[in-house]
Each structure stands twice: as C-alpha cells, then as structure tokens.
Image (tube, rainbow, N blue to C red):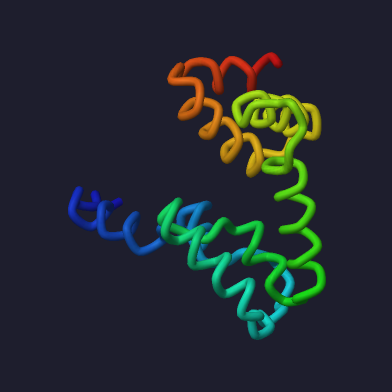
Length: 134
C-alpha cells in the first residue's frame, strides 16, 4: 500500500469543500422566485430613509417588495406599532418586540429588535437577556 503525502491529502480536502451554510444569506431574501415590483415614490423614499438611518434596507422590507400593496400594509402596520403615539417609549416598544419575537421563535426579529434594545437602553446585555429569557 502506498502512503499519500500530506500535500495530496490537503489538496483532496480543499477540492471537496462545501459552500458555507450562510452563503447567500445577505442576498437571497426568500426561497420563492418573486421579482420585486417597481417601488412607488413613497416606498422609494422609505427605502432611502432606511439606507440613510440604518445603512441598509431590512430584508423584511425587501421580502415584501414583490407586492406593493403588501409592502405598504407591512410598513403601515410597523409604523403604527412602533412610531404612533401610544404612551410607550421607543425602548418599551422594542422590548415588547423582543419578547414577542422570542415567543414566536423568530430569529430575524430577535436580532433586529434585540439590537434596538441594546442601542436604545445603552445596556448591551439587556437585549441579550431578554432574547434568552424575556
């Protein structure tokens, strides 16, 4: 039996490498092949505000972009829940969103709202603690 060199074994391993499990996570928004519809002027401005304030457009918005009516409905619901007068502070709303996201086991929302809690509270551990045990 012939012994293989370590170089040959290393080359064999690199040729059979699998793509990372997260490959495409930042570009592939949904498994459905739904092309985005043209954005209305209002949604174009909203996406631009997201870019300006966050540095990106959240994937949840991109996922609704295939249907202008669904996108507008989602944005209206989000703005009503998170921005309309209610007697709750922005931090309290985000904390509620973390608890709901944790209960619903929505990793995407946990990450987004947990980050908001960390930022708004000035307490980085708070968002993490709430996500793990609200």
